[in-house]
Image (tube, rainbow, N blue to C red; front, side):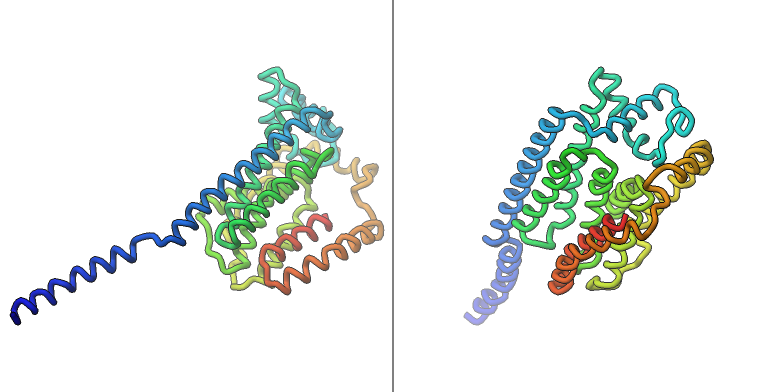
Length: 324
């Protein structure tokens, strides 16, 4: 009896351990509910973004393009057929918007479609992608409903809100930096980092958006300042996304110095003389800057009070775009 009891006691221990392990590995009811809810939330966000994208494409293809966008697309077509920037095409702004329009323009030319059709369809798809990346980067930082609402709001702002200004450089810059802002909020908060490849792609996209106009550099500068001042943890300034962003700007500046001498030596001096937005007196800018900052103060104060890293980053970006 004693031997049997001892055998039964010893044999029950491994069984207990096995049962314990199996119980630990078995997904709980709440975990299964979270997973199912996450999948349902993903499809809901996807459907909302797709509907907004389809509505935007329908609206945009039913209206005339913005005159600045039409000028960019015409100039891009001329560049693709042999024209030279700064010689045949005289434009005070740097040429990056024309370069970025080349894929959609070449596609429109090859298919025999209006150039603004392919351009606005492509911009709509990229805006949807930007909103999706924004939501993906916020996963785990907020509730599923909160992430879904933010994604829908960002998609609406990038797709429907621009209206007549759809496809302008400011619109393109906002699209390009939205994932960068979401990543910056993760850096300012307690959330973990993402893969090096994703951070590099986000930095490259943000760099192209910032390089569209020299003044846009105020956006990453203020955003990074907010991350360093109000972040929940110390983060390095020389992060992958910042290095990629800076590399794009440096390469673009070097390209202009090496290959766009006609633009720098002839067009820029002429623009300084006659173009209203060049050398504008600071006293003429201050009233609008003050108005923009006053409107942003409630957002900034509330975000800092709530220790909301995303709110702080978005407020800094708002001030940066207002300053530019």
